[in-house]
Length: 430
Image (cartoon, rainbow, N blue to C red; front, top):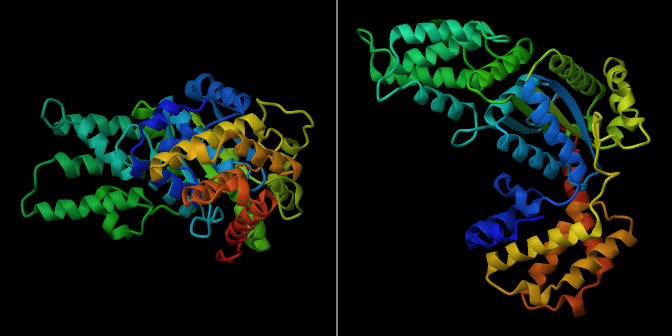
């Protein structure tokens, strides 16, 4: 059930920020619970996996399938929220032309920059800064001997790459060791920035990195080792594990054959890598065409041989590899609950009485119209319609008198189609 009491505590600026994000088709990460309705079975089994399998050392890959508008991105946001609540570190990466899955080093860079956990802000830089702060006990920084002991522990962690461990030790030295003769405070700041930049898979020369015991830049050959090292470090920091959410994998379909093959090879390697890992869970979001189309997974034998069975199950298996949102759409009553939440946030945002102008009956009519047109499963379409109607009503127009629901749904669909076409433009590097 949506927490309406918590929604009532929103400030007008917060509420307006939520509405503006929803207009763009996304839900602000901090407010996911305000929009979580339905699909309880999927969430129940995912929570069970996280608590009783991944947190105990298991590893798993799941595919989240749904058509455009079915709520895949929102559902992944819910998974992120659940995982953070349970004590996991999480990275939610949207695969775009700037972050293409066929260039895994670019994906790794985004993974580090989207990292969330028990620290302020987002990104590995903030995680590392907090970790350095924890090394100070009672205002006393760690001694050289303590750092040496820690270095030995880090280098011997299962799955830890020596360059990753050395970079951690170099950060500790940079922060806590006294300045050497001829060294200036500005030198320390410059060096710390180089190390942080390396952790984020940024560009750095081997000459710049060598003084820190780092002998490799992050590249395609070692980026998967770095991912394992990140997971090992997170476990060292007492996280329950690492959850990686990769959204919009379906954009690969629109690319050239060579790009698709490179992308699918990375998906295969990620699956193989996960099966050899611990405390690790990857979710990929896809549209059904990724499993059905000739340009989908079946076009790459090495991957298709691993995943061909996931789309062949006729009955829903809530513990299976495929999370099928399209076959488990929200019910009309659940969409009305969502509409009530949107209405209250819109009220707070623009300081007006929305319930009087947009009653539950109108929300129910929107559901009926979507169902009549075979579009009930498209949550994003419902959200766009409700916000459009609320906007009209707030501006003094009576929706009951002026609104043609069929025309309205077509306008909202056109907006979504335009968004979809922009997402699928084949403009990645070939």
